[in-house]
Length: 302
Image (cartoon, rainbow, N blue to C red; front, top):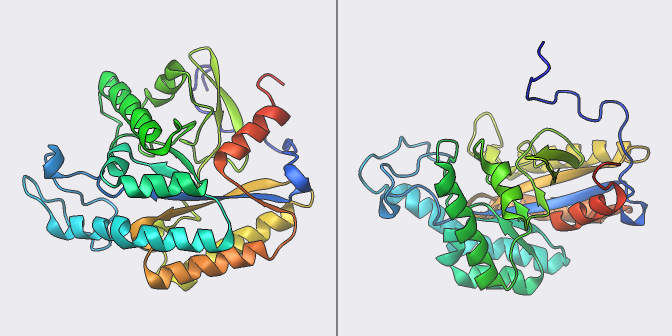
């Protein structure tokens, strides 16, 4: 074992910090809507192949040609699914955080304005919904700035949270270099926020979740129905709620317009929202609220 091993496999260990969530909440529940439609790989945007990753038909990538089937599946999310999900949250007066792909919002500014007007947090999901692992640093920097500018232009406020998803070795450095971000969610490794040091500067990580996530509708073995998704969300909520009596944590529910926006799946999402709202001492909040609370309660260096 070397001293320069770059991973942290310990985290908080058994000595968990108490988050002191507002209202003595036993659980901070964060809904996240991924808005990606129009930002996926496409011949129309100069990519060498059409999108094949995370589609319901599991078609192979189409090289050098448009995949009209994949395009149509993504279009359902922006044309129909998005608005159904917006109605569910409006009916319950719940706010979510949106991981917004910049070019996707640019191509549907009505959706951007609707989220901003409703009070949802529009955070950044980078400029394109692509894998950034091999994207040159200068290109990723440009994409980051384009996304920031687009969200600010369409929503009236710049993003303060960041989630690339398929991020690169340069992503966190670019975030602290830019200087305006309060947190990053490019981590899957905890149930509480934590601080990291990047290029000598502190950065708050508010970890995301892939398990309580509708992405598994397309990743067998995963959710074969909305009932599967609801059952898993309920089990996760119940465990964390019980633990929250002595050790409160956070729960993230990841959603996508083209999947949870489908009627049979939206029904399951609505049932879970109602189930969670039926419990006392649950803080349903935006991720920016979690980040600001953590900075106040657990500032860097303490």
